[in-house]
Every structure is written in C-alpha cells, then in structure tokens.
View 1: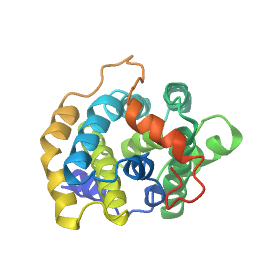
View 2: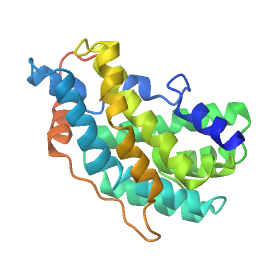
View 3: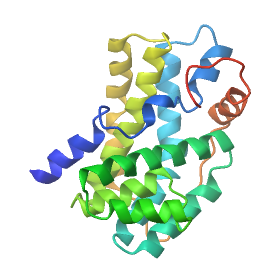
View 4: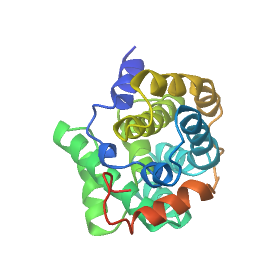
Length: 223
C-alpha cells in the first residue's frame, strides 16, 4: 500500500516539482495554431509520451532508478539525457524542474535528496528532472514500474494544466485527453526500458515551437 501511496503522492500536480512554470512548447504551438483545441492537445500529448518521453526521459529515469544510491550511475544517466535533449529551452527547463524537485525532497528530508542536490550544484550531476525522479523514487521504495507511472502521469498532467491555463481547453476536456492516454502509459510502465538503453527522442513540432518560444517578446510560461 505504501508503494501505491508514494506513487499517488509523486504524481500529484500539487507536489512542488517546478513544472507549473513550463509548457514544453505548448504555448508557442498554440500561438501558431489558433484553431487548435482538445483534439490537437490529445495528439500532442500522445506524441510527447510515445515519441519523446518514453524513449528519452523514461530511459534516464529507469537507469537512475537502477543505479539507486550509486551516484556515478545516476550521473551517467543524467548526462546521457542532457546530451539527448538538443533544444536548449527544454534542456534548461528540465534542469530547473529537477532542481525544484530535489529542493522539495531535501526540505522534506527524503533519503539521498540532499546528496543529489549537492552533486548537481557541484557539477557532478547535470540535474535533469527524470533521473532525479528515478533516484529519489528508488530511495522512497517505489518500484520501477510505479516510478515510471508517477513520472509519466505528472508529465501528462503538466501539459493539461498548461493547455487549460492558456485557455485552449476546458478542465473536463483536458481530463478527457489525459484519461485517454492512461492505457498507453500503463504499457510503458509495464515494459521498462532495457538495461543499457540510451535516451533518444525526436518530436520536431514541439521542439521547434519551444525554440521559437524562447525568442517570444511576451510569454506566460518559461518554455
């Protein structure tokens, strides 16, 4: 039961992981597609989960989870994700989210969080969110499938929150889009990335939008 409760806790959008400030390119995409709404959001969320998150962030999370308290292993997963994240705003956003996530767990007294935070500050780790989640979730006793489910759900929920705040979908439409993707997330969590997998992801639509967003004169989100 505690594994389930930890999973719910870490998937909760109220947990201060820093994702509230990031849209992952959605803001710029919607600015360029005035007619886009709930259908477009569902497609973008599915593509993000299947074409980028599952093959990139999830791979780094799994490697860090398996490394556990081995800081060298966590750092290797972290820097592999850093190398695979080609768009600078997304790379910086991931690191800022990771810093906020570790700060929250450090203040909560989660085992290993202070050590990871110090490693990020000293440059031993890059500090991306996904590998930090993997290491911290392992310390909480969450198994790998539960860790993937919690992190993947949080990523999807952040996209829904961004779309609602941008006024492109209503709360019910957003939750309908999220619910439709839960079976896909279940499949990803049930078949974790193999040992030795390398992070890689390609989602040009949102990557280009995120790059353009960095040059926008006015914006609501950091990415």
